[in-house]
Length: 429
Image (cartoon, rainbow, N blue to C red):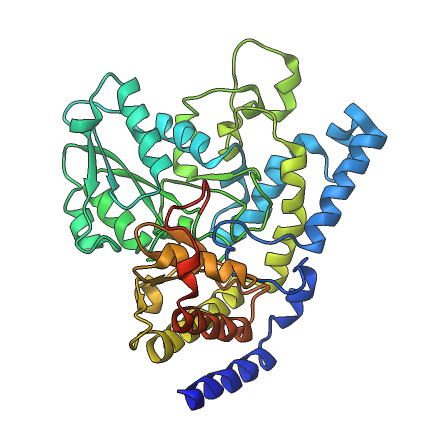
C-alpha cells in the first residue's frame, strides 16, 4: 500500500507540473496551511475580486450618488454588464442573461412567469433529490395559484437515493404538466443531468422547462440557446467565486421575451425611461426585464474580478481539468480508501458526461470524518446521510492537495480519530 501511495504522489506532482491552469492559483487568497475543497459551497476570494470590491468602495466614497452613472463600470448598468460577462459560460446571448436577486427569488420570479396552469396542464415536475429551497418555492407557486402541492407537484423519484434517471423523469412529462424545474447537478452526489435531452423531451410534450444551475455554472460548460432551454437561474458564490451571498443570475430564452415578467419591479424597466417615474411598468426587452429591485453593488462588485478570471482561463479548459481532478480522486479512492478497514465508497457517477464538479465520498462516519479533516486544515463539507463532498476547483486546487486529502483520510480511519468528534452536526455542515 505504501508503494501505491508513493505512485499516486508522484503522479500528482507530474499532473501539477503539466497543468496549463496552474498560474491561476496565485490569483487567489489561499490561507497558509489550508487545503480548501469546499468550492461547491463557497468559492475562494481572488485578488481580482478583492480589487474590484475595493474599487467599488472607493467609488462610493468619492462619487456618492454619482456612482450610478460615473463609476467604472456604472452601477446603473452593472446587472446587464455582468450578465453579458456570464452569458458566455452558459451559451447564451448577452441580453438573455442578467445578474439579479438570489437563487430563490429568481425561482419565484421565473416560476411566476412560466408556471401558467390552464385546463389539464396544472402540474410542475421536480425531483426528490433537489435542494430544498427549490421545492419550497415551487410549493409556494402552486399555492399562489390556489392549488394543492400534494396533488400538483410531481417529484421524480430516485432508485438509489443518490442519482436520478432522466428516462424516468421524462415519463412524467404528460398532458397534465405545465412546467418542470430540475437541477443541472445534484447537490449531494454531483450527478450531472442531460439538460439537452430533458429539454427536448419536455418540449415534445408541450412542457416549459427550466434549470437551477447553481452547482454547475463556472465548472461545466452549458449551451442554453442551442439546447433551447426556456429559463435558468444560478447563484454566484460557488464556482463563480463571487463571495458569500453574492448576487445571482437568471437566463430567459429570447423566444419568451414577449411574455414579460410576472413579478414587476422598477429595476426591470426600460433603462432609458426608468427615471421617468411612470406608474405604468414598461419592462426591458430581454432578461433585464426580470430584475425586481436595485442591485446590491457591494455584493456584485467581486464578480467583476472573478468573471474576468473565468473568461481568461476558459470554461472548456476549466472543465477539462475539473474532470481530470475528479477522475484522479476517484482512482485514489478505489485503490486506497475503498478496501477495509477504510470503507469509503463513491456516490458520484463515474461517467464524465454524468459528473459535475465534485465527488461525494460516502462513509458511515462521514460527519465525524469531515470534522476530523477540518481539524487537520482540510476543508470539505458534509451532506446527510453519509456524503463528504470534495470539490477540487480547477482554478486553485492541485492534484497534490487531493493526494494529501486521501492520505489524511487513511490516517483518520487508522487512528479512529473521528471518534473524538460529536455525531451531531453544527448549524452549518
